[in-house]
Image 1 (cartoon, protein in one colour):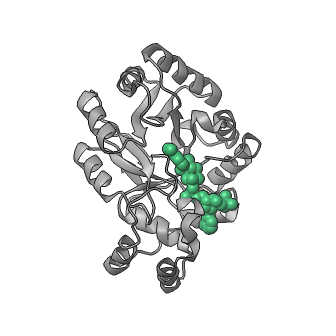
Image 2 (cartoon, helix red, strand yellow; image 1 turned 90 degrees about the vertical axis):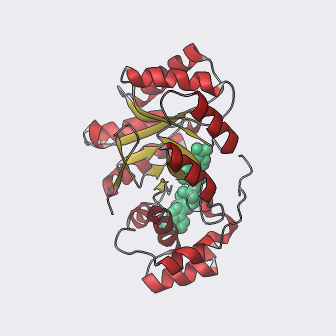
Amino acid sequence: MENRIKLNNGVEMPRIGYGVYQISPSQTERCVRDALAVGYRSIDTAQCYYNEAEVGQAVRSADIPRDEVFITTKLWGGRGYADTLRSIDQSLDRLGMDYIDLLLIHEPSGNYNEIYRAMEDALKIGKLRAIGVANFLDDTFKDLIDNCTIVPAINQIETHPFRQQTEMQRMCRECGTVLEAWSPLACGKNGIFHNPVLVSIAEVHGKSVAQVVLRWLYQRDIVIIPKSTHKERMIENLDILDFSLTDEEMSLITRLDRGKSLFNWW
Ligand SMILES: NC(=O)c1ccc[n+]([C@@H]2O[C@H](COP(=O)([O-])OP(=O)(O)OC[C@H]3O[C@@H](n4cnc5c(N)ncnc54)[C@H](OP(=O)(O)O)[C@@H]3O)[C@@H](O)[C@H]2O)c1
């Protein structure tokens, strides 16, 4: 299976990336440097993670050409058109970069159609390579699709074995939007690492539960951005390309769906 996915504007994005939510600014540079050293080439940050500067610093110090690393960040807060353009420039300044590979609206608040229009214009002048959204479910996603000129490349939403987002994936796919899973490991909630179904599948393959869950998402063509502050787990979470789940194993995991958020944010 190809390890990069082509977005709807032709830009290619790694299918496995590294998320930095809840990594403190003081730890972020070390974590991102470790992630790059073990092979990640996609980093997911956000304005409200307060670690964009440290992500940028880690990428610069890693001695990897800028065009080999895919950087995602997300706009925080409901804004108007001009304020959104200013906010994009502020993210670029903090990252210390000339362009952002993927910019997402973090959540459907404020006048998101106006925010998105500003993003479309920033894309046209090369400050962004791709644009999309996060946490746009059902109605807000449909509304954006009805009002945008450039179809979002990505919709990043809570997706893991307990919230599988089958219907949202279908809706996104129909529009040409790729689904990206946030909290692909359910952030460790709901006993995921000890779930008997996942443990038994992991034993069959000689893999960890984390690897089985990430592989299940990968086989569903969902982009994943697991987070770990531990280098050995970063390696483990990348190491999912040497096995595959059978149709029966895929459907055993399908049955774990609860169809509800574990976070109750969206
Ligand atoms: N757009 C949004 O609204 C939104 C919301 C949430 C998250 N996100 C993005 O999605 C990324 C991932 O989500 P997340 O950070 O919430 O959770 P996650 O990746 O589902 O899970 C992270 C948790 O699992 C642990 N872990 C990671 N790999 C492991 C392994 N192989 N074995 C055992 N435990 C493991 C980590 O602990 P250690 O760190 O101690 O290893 C951490 O506690 C975020 O970093 C962020 O970039 C976006």
